Image (cartoon, rainbow, N blue to C red; front, side):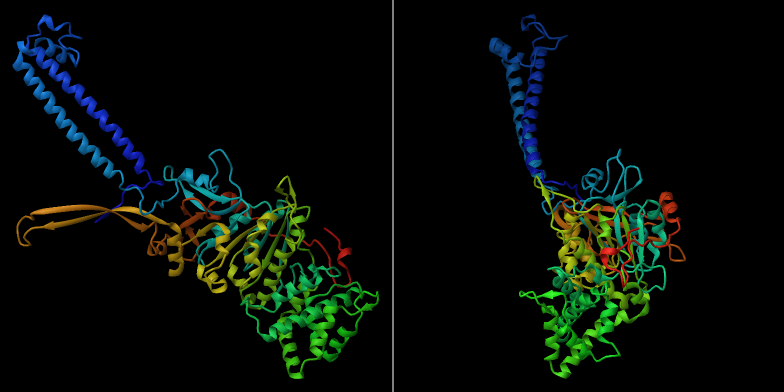
Length: 630
């Protein structure tokens, strides 16, 4: 039999021991006074309350220590009376001393029990939830992104848990567990700053774009497989051509292109294609700039697959073209990186050259789709607009499930450009304090984060993008998704200050969450019996108690967290449970927050989505410097 003992957030055996040792002498002194008073009254009664005893305090009650004075004066006159009093006082005092010593001893021994010697993990109470920053004080409104809810056990009232700090957040929630209606939608219907939201089916745009537009936001939908209703974005428009940064910018783009699935492993052909694509993009950028046009990925794909001329002519053009690049002598020469890429291809054996070209073409095959070409052939916005436009900007990255795998390379490239471009500028400090580089904060709300594949640049950037005003909200189905991409030493979860978890489907995730809850101490009761097996009465029953450790939640208990209740159509009708971990604070055993149970959110979600905004018109034939602004 096991019973749970009281838990304390801190170890306090010293305090209890000192309290018991102080109480012992006080009890002993009180006992001595009581015994002395009894002896005084016994002697007074035995002597008939003789007037020589002095005046009583009240009635026939004398001071407690009076019998000592009487004994000094009249011991030999009433020897038997005083001997009896002495015997009773000393016997009673001795018994009291023995009892007090034993009591203090047992008290100090028991004080070391139930003290969390094996662990002090516990669920956060209201004051602890408030200290974690997730729950505002009673007289203050909440702010920030939604991470769940907490039901006050005293009132039964559900309070929203929100986080408004610069730190990142990770949520672990299986499919159909309520992460959209509980975390994503409430956040989009309340976050007042700029946001980039990964919208797998276009639902987030339909439910939140109308309200955000009504709040004065610029709202844009990038749906690269859509025939209409999408903004266009040319990732190559973010490259700083004509500067010392151009080669690095191009290489960063190509690094993502040659790893379309995010495996992080490049073979010889991919590495060679990397050099070729870098050279071709630089070559076309200078070539198009002469005519006032911007290079695009569809244009790069066309150049490498032009049916009207052999590709060998492209290599020769790259080698011989004067790319507005001047040698130290002032003579116009070919761009050195472009020329090197062309020379490498010309010097390569025909068979190997064909394999490299085939690999490069494969990385560009997506951009032969007329719809993708239409939506990446120019830019209706620049990445810098997300944080530096006059108004906050809401960008929805819409990818339908049927196109998820096909568009994965493009979406990886978009995220890569957003992160890299927004942290280009050096941070500034005044009086030792970092200064905001951008006009607006930006929330990267990345649902189904694992669908992007391995984004090494994102993992590394999490450690410093908070200083640029960028807050990430990463949502995955389970930790195994991250481990399969980044390994068990991944730093994404450890970079997130707040971690939210719904009931998992995988044991690995349950075990990880169990460890996250910590270890607590309980009291285990062991009962043993002795006596004849067939006797009518057992001879003895022995109980012993031991402090033992156990996880605050075991893996199977994590797996059995209350799931949301669903109706016959599969729609959530009642919330389930949620675990919220904030670094440096006790975990919160919370309740899912559901937007459709809040009339404020339902009214906001009813506002129809508007047509997408467009900020700029960077089309072929227009240079970035001549863009128009909405």
